[in-house]
Length: 437
Image 1 (cartoon, rainbow, N blue to C red):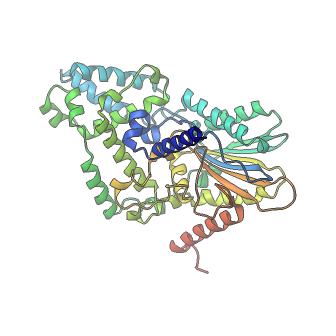
Image 2 (cartoon, one colour):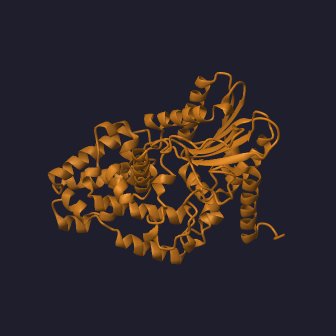
């Protein structure tokens, strides 16, 4: 008995220690996490979900997910570092190590030739895995003859992510009736531009705070010294900050390509340099898409149309006996603010000091890796009448919501709908879109 108690206590302490890990510690174990939005989807960390309340079963899923791993989107994402290094090499300004960095950058550039922004093989595998686990975890939703309504943005990597997920589901249950579409008709909520909100990202106060923070975390002098053999050349001919940025981006995204098996650029950076590069990215994403109080905490509302549609479509489906699933495939610039708008776990925290983001648990790689997704799982009583319940998953892990739970991660759908409808309406009043009641 004592041994069992000690073992249980030990496991609890290990779990608490794991939860308390800092990004620095996490990067030591898995440097890929420092890639922010380039972090390749790791799969759920929570292997066993909380059982449904007694007498309940899952029967409908509402989902929005990012495309899987991809090549970098723009030609300059590869060319800027390549051209700087090529020019330096042509005048004898690279060290031997710098020449090898150029060799690796050239390999990455060639691999992505005419594939900019496209889904990689790993990205396809990620979505097959997500769909398979969705089917296995919530098999009642997909049993028998049932409908799957899937939509994608018009971007090919999103369409292919959707098609890979649907193929996996169809292979698991050939009886599924699948409707899938990718149209400009739905882009107003599938990838909302929300210009009136995005224009408020970088007000003077926010810009000043971010620039000061960024200056404290600029850390690339040593990197330049390892690549170039002439400091004067670097000072006069190289934009060191820009080159460091693009080299770190290339290093971060290798994990999404087949070259990950043979090439790395992370050896360019010390642990401190990795951390500082990530800190700058983490704060930038917090300002641009998170609930940053310096710019009014408005950015999560860029996804108000998406959340509104999810509420409406859920309302239309939860009354059905066997509604199936509504699946949507888009981008991280939707998933991140949606998670913040829903206030999932730490995502909705308003933190004025960017230095405190890690300590407060606002970590971008936990929110929006490649393939990131939000799933709302709806439950009904197996027999008789009762409340419809809902739980929310972020990247397939159960999350807390700012509502009173029925038990564990399960909430009344009526409470969920009321809370977020009121939140959206209050925002519309604030923005002058509707009159206050």
